[in-house]
Amino acid sequence: MSQTLAQADRGSAAETLTAVPLRRPGLRVAAVVVLFLLVFLLEGWITNPRMQWGTVGEFLFSPVIMEGLRTTLLLTVLAMALGIVGGVVLAILRMSKNPILSQLSWCYIWVFRGTPLLVQLLFWYFLSAVVPTVGLGIPWGPTFVQAETNTLITQLTAAVLGLGLHEAAYMAEIVRAGITSVDDGQNEAAQALGMSRGQTLRRIVLPQALRIIIPPTGNQAISMLKTTSLVFAIAVPELLTSIQGIYSRNFQQVPLLVVACFWYLVATSVLNVGQFYLERRFGRGAGRGLPPTPLQRLRAAARNHREETAR
Amino acid sequence: MTTTTTSAPVIRAESVHKSFGRTEVLKGIDLTVSPGEVMCLVGPSGSGKSTFLRCINHLETIDRGRLYVRDELVGYEERDGKLHELSEKAVARRRQGIGMVFQRFNLFPHMTALENVTEAPVQVRREPKEKARARGVELLDRVGLADKKGSYPAQLSGGQQQRVAIARALAMEPELMLFDEPTSALDPELVGEVLEVMRALAEDGMTMVVVTHEMGFAREVGDSLVFMDDGVVVETGRPADVLGAPRHERTRAFLSKVL
Ligand SMILES: Nc1ncnc2c1ncn2[C@@H]1O[C@H](COP(=O)(O)OP(=O)(O)O)[C@@H](O)[C@H]1O
Ligand SMILES: [Mg+2]
Image (cartoon, rainbow over all chains, first blue to last red; front, side, top):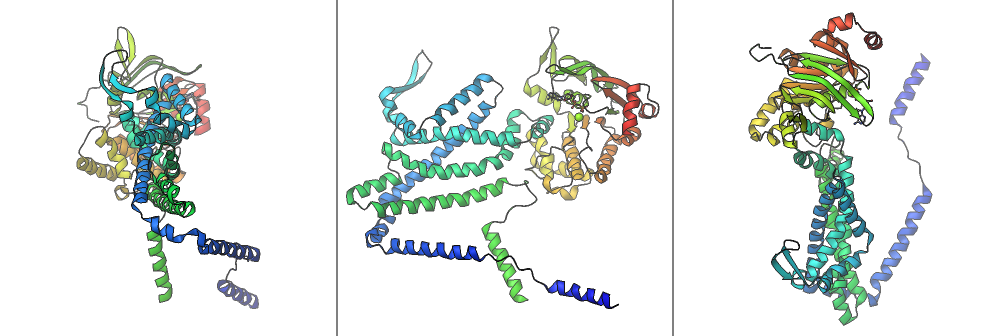
């Protein structure tokens, strides 16, 4: 009898016991030290009179820089669009049963991944020097329309071509990895239902491949946003080129580069958010549920808080 | 099964040969399946059952012999004494009359149960969405899953997924259904619900070829049983006869292992 009582006692004690996680004092000390160093550095940076914070503020929203930012975003969008479309085409060619098509795709990827982007940009820019006119017609036959390469390939088109065609080579590998990740049974099921190859690819395989394709594509887009700064070499007036234009006149390099960093950070942050929602959208059916959006998480936290205070 | 339809066989296989590289997997298969017949295909693993089933809807090409579905050669056309492979479009059209259910379900994971069922009618037959949805709900109801129409495959049990897969195949109104070990990937307690749906389908007069290890199902639902081994048909007969009194040593050896 007394034994059972003691057991019951222990049982209720176990219910009220709280688990204490292992304390790691060393980690706390390290965190404090790092934070202290960070504050020290930031303080020095912010209060440094040579930083010319006034200049930063003066140029942050200046029309020239806004225009540069617009060009940077436009370049990013166009180059990524070209890269994605080109990547899908290259990936499909690469997986084609026809050996010539798949070899062609392989060669493209080999060349465009194997040479520096800067060289490719300059190449497109100076194309008119080698090929002064381009025309549309029958090879070795009559030409129907003809144009000066110089008028066709402006600085902007050279930049989009350079960035986009280079990107296509990388996207091809990403798309291919996505497509091959889709179980072959999906293809068979679609074909058994009488769907054509095109329908199967468009309706069944690509939507599933997107789940694999989107995360690295988001990285590529963010990387592209920053890579557009390379086109200063062919004098396209994007963000960095505009910034350079300004500091070459007023010699306020560092404050203006801070302005550039600010806008690049803003833009990449926006892309990050977009990537999160895209991944959610194409993750449908992947698991038993979707991860909550930050807004949903905030609402859930607020609800929890209300419930707890109510108790 | 109504007797108004012609009694011409739904499937007629004549000396079907198929090799993968150097290994001959089908070494001359001859068999016929009549309208409304439920044929169960049994045999040891690797004997070529799946390959033969896949030849029927041209997921695999054949090397020699002839394979007719409703008097049409599957995937080929006979011209000048030769078999010419049909265009992708013509093959797709012929496949529409043949439903297939896979061992691993192969549902489209990015679509809900209902979307899985309506996909082919809308995309392939260009049915209006509303009509396809109405029929899709009807079909899901028929397999006992009307309340799951909005669920994604990952949210369904194996048995439920396989039943959706059956509804998906039925949506194209096939005259022939192929089942490749439809219950082999299921937990034992889920096998019954799938077999029940198949039994109902058989009772409605559907022509079916079922690769299975469920001898109880073969005995009760099957009209004929074909025992395959090593790429040949060893023995054919009524299920009760073959299972009860196998004539060949190989059949006996196999049955002693699975029964
Ligand atoms: N795509 C393929 N390539 C090469 N060999 C294959 C392929 N598919 C099946 N086989 C071989 O063909 C034989 C028969 O396979 P299968 O038809 O799947 O047998 P079953 O369904 O009776 O178990 C096996 O030896 C298998 O390894
Ligand atoms: Mg098999």
